[in-house]
Image 1 (cartoon, rainbow, N blue to C red):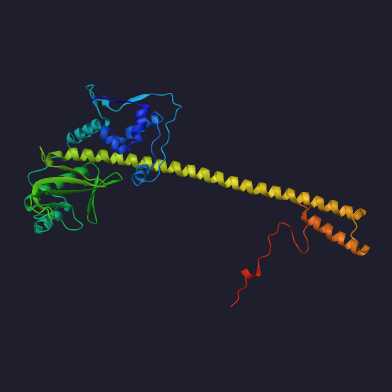
Image 2 (spheres, rainbow, N blue to C red; image 1 turned 120 degrees about the vertical axis):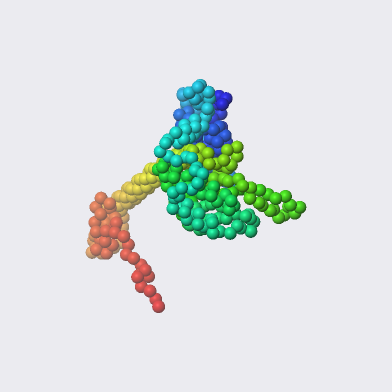
Amino acid sequence: MEKIRVSRKELYDLVWSESLLSLAKKYKLSDNSLRKRCKKMNIPLPPAGYWQKKKHGYSVKKEPLPKLYEGETETILCYRDKRGNYVSAEESSFVRLKREIENNPDVPTKVPDRLTNPDQLIQAARKSLLKDKPSSRRYPGMVSTKYGELSISVTPQNVGRALRIMDTFIKLARARKHEIKIHYNQTLLIIGEEEFKIGIQEKHKIIPSEDDRYRKYAPSGVLAFRRKIISSKEWKDGKSPIEGRLPQIMASLELEAQQRKQERLYHQEQQRIREEKERIAREKRERREKEMEKFKELLNTAERWKQSKILRDYLNAVKSGSVNLEKESSEMDNWLKWATEKADWYDPLVNKEDPILGSYNDPPDPEPSKFFFSY
């Protein structure tokens, strides 16, 4: 593979032009490899959900490329193999894993000519396929397994072949410490925590017709091993039948499981970082709100103190006679006593409790309407 060099700015433009998974497929690299390079070169990546929002027409923000950077200014999108040739990281990992599976004598990779010691799932599928009558619907000539069984749909003449392929694959998966289980109408291959919907289906060919509105199909005799998720992938008979490609299929699925796990862990880490940022921001906001409440209370207290000083100055002026209220002497004494008590009640430095008003900081009594109802 030809060596590809890209500058830091070019790599930044690439990762913001399409998703990492798309770029990984285009350049035959793992998305994790691209992510590590971006991190090393201080290149920001689109957040989770960025491409979905952009696809549906939402406004999305592109994070600028940081200018403060003193590291490498370019990178190579390929790696050298032992012979010095440039190969992709994903390709070399695939070749290495495929060779490991092929050369392991403890795992079955060769499909036998006859079905021997079949797995219980294969036994149940075999009974259904032999009893089923060929379909006469849109895809005629096919027999299929029942609900809750392995996903197999082929012509009667390919039943034995499909069962032998699936039986060998099940035994290979279990030898590789993976799990095969039936969930409702789905056959699941479980690698670690990653699930793959799998099955064997015979492909169809279109029969030419004068009326293009109604297409007719016929079995092609070509078997395909399918992996069904958001985007399906299949390995079908070609130059070599799929019987000889089980190590390739398993290696591809195991690498995909690794990539999916890395992607999941990355998004989980991003989610953890977002939640941590939100927690810090929330605590900061709450501290600010509490501080502001305390400051407002301080201002209100200072204002009360200032008003209480004005009130006491006024009472002193009344006592000195500079302010004439035209009251009787006894009446004046009672009024001054009452006013002084109210000043002591209002003054935050005294905060004297009033027999009628109570403490200044006491909450007001609830309104009667909140407790009494009219009928």
